[in-house]
Image (tube, rainbow, N blue to C red; front, side, top):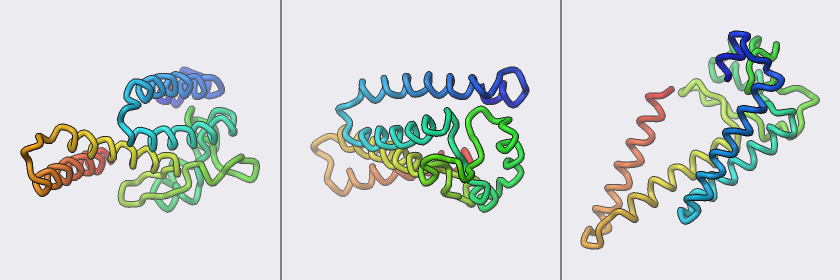
Length: 164
C-alpha cells in the first residue's frame, strides 16, 4: 500500500490507517498464538507503544526531520512533509506523544526507529535465544548451548545489516 500511495494509486488518508489495522490484527494473532514464548511480551510492549503513537497521530507514525537528516535520509523529508507516504507524518509541534515516534537515528543502517521498534527488536532477539535454548538437547554442555545462541544471534544481526 505504501508503494501504491507513493505512486498515487491510493489516498494516504485511508490507505495508511487501513494497512496498519490489518498488520496489527495479523501480528496480534501471531503473538497470541505464541504467547508461551516469554520474549514475545517485549514485542507486545513495542507494538503497543507504536500503536499508541500511530493512533494518537491520526494513523501515521511521526518521524523527526532531524533524525532523518542524521541517518542520511534527508531526501525523504519532502515526501513525508507532503504526506506522500502512507505510513509516516513529519513530527511537528502538534504531534502527540512525539517521544514515541521515529526519533532515533541509526546512521550506520540508514534507518530511523522508534522506542517501540527497539522493544520489538529486543523481543525478536529474545525469541531467537529462547528457541535456541529450547531446542538444545540436554546432553549439550552449557558452553555449547551458549555458543549456539551466540551464532544464532550473529546470524540474525548479519541478516539485519544486509537488509539495510
